[in-house]
Image 1 (tube, rainbow, N blue to C red):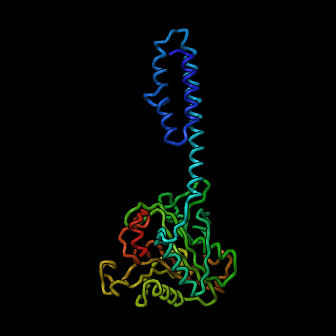
Image 2 (spheres, rainbow, N blue to C red; image 1 turned 45 degrees about the horizontal axis):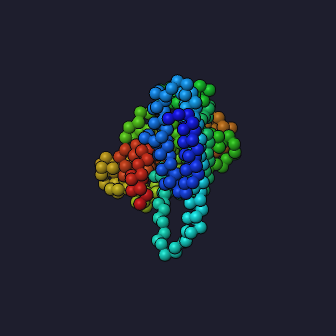
Length: 342
């Protein structure tokens, strides 16, 4: 094939592309000229046998054929698609007898549901919701909470420290400090949010978890108020038969300090697999706010008293839904989450 023949072939190919009235006809033109067994591959194959004087022109015309035909095919393909869409849209008729299309409804994640339920319950007791940053200062996370400088929680093995000297908060307690710094008593707030500790992930631990903490400060707050409010919360969340048990403990930011348990809502305190045959389920810690904490935020320790408590949201979710592995809450397995949503 000579250069003039390639030039004539290009004009023929362009004319056939312009004349194609459907996408199928257009595809046939593409296959005929640009396909693996089409005209262009044969031309390129024959270049090595062409006279040396003819090769430059033949190569140039072959490239022009490929480029111009490809561009025209794409333009015609878009035009035919637009015309088809316009035609089908005009002819489409709505059929009211067809059944509706089912759309799957989402549901709250178990962690979100526990947080929302807790906020709703404490709202009936007069608590408002407070919030604070996930990236905290050492002062708000440790110093203001009366945590000694040699406390293990300050070590890099336990806490995510940042190059700026700040840290990912290890608890939601810093929110309580920020609230007391910003307003005078009385204070009655709960803080719910994400916390971070350098725990090795296993069935009961996660480096990322959620807490709900409560703070009540007034002139005559006692442990009786704490027990009454926590008992009300437990019964509203777990069932009317649930009881609360306090056990002596130590926390630097409360004095006296306690750990508290809920009676097992499954066996009614008789002992089962959920409560390890004890009849009680460990929840978290609480206590009366340490006077040193009041002094840090500018409250008069002689004029006010208060209590603080904490709740692990994942622990509550595991108890509520009978889970034995915290990682189930983070795997995002749709089949598992749909079961909990039922």
